[in-house]
Length: 496
Image 1 (tube, helix red, strand yellow):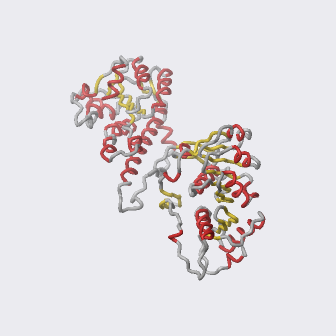
Image 2: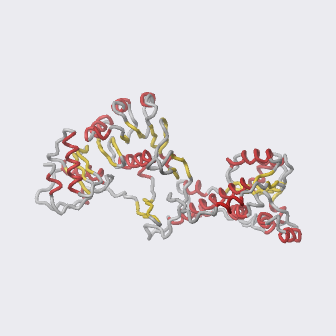
Image 3: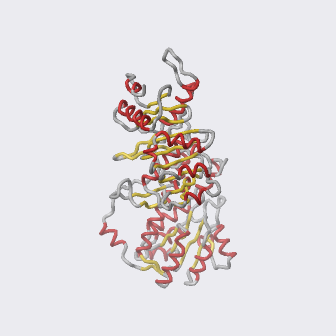
């Protein structure tokens, strides 16, 4: 369950922060390296050895450095105690943690280190067991997941981050090169400014790690549909030009860029991302070849057909005026004929599971148009629906309900025909994604008129009918779906 956002509890006093960042350089004499992700670790260790820095290590990292002919001591050699319990206990020892936590400008700390024959550890390079990758594997058991919960790693990371005035902590392999560069600049030393930044990254790293574990364990609450505590922590994936409006800052967090990969065009805006999400979720409601056109988070046309081209023409016919500058999503590989039809009007974003040969070349001729590859079936993505409110969050389950013929009850004397029922089911699938008050006039394979977001159901119905009339579409004999309460039939009469 991917549910992460971190709340900002308080803002530190800027004077205090600035004084914490004074440019005091810490020269490294002793380093502890214990990493699950071994990218770049050999190169880092070689760079450290150029400054005669002593390296301590554990398990697989110790073996990797030894095979690379790098001088390294084992943690067991430092602690005088072997790794036990299948490696669960190795760094949890005063000889390690006192070395990490000692304030080396504190005479009492130095005296106690000497008394216990403990040397300070100036650099801690640690990243944690791959819990996220483990639980993402199909068929993984709870016992397998539990074995990937790191204990010693987060303890060392938090200790070093807390003591960043005297200890450097690195959790991200992508930081190794900048660390090496700074050491070369400062004769083997790292500034306090950098140590502060690395400590911040370290706390974010352990917070995210614990959030993933908490989220995974929350999934084992069979009697609870929503968790007691929502633990949120998503990594920033993009800084946007601005938010909903130019005066608002905006950023994207999480895995959106994994699910939707931009192949071409300008960077995505805050509103583009909302529209891509809305269009794709609606398109996922349909099994037949379907095209969806969305504008400002609301569908302005939906069509299904035997071919994607037929589906797109039906969707466009609902409201061709609003479709200009809209977002188009399809649930089949985008073929050349449909691409040429879409290309006839200005379209801001196109989303497809794949693109036929030559289609991208055609669509890329308009340099500003965004082309998106939808990399996953959204019906398989499970997450909570979360909205921010003042002082907290509103949380609900995703609406994955599908209205079926069996779930509907006929209360009128005349029962709907089979075709009317099919049209009603189509309308309901669309109405689920239209902002309330939602009115959708439809036939079995296309929308005819959509009214959205009005305070009155009657006004939504008027807009839907107005759109149908403008498009030259006839409503007689169609079906209507709405999330609005109809105490009277007045909203429906406009279509007669």
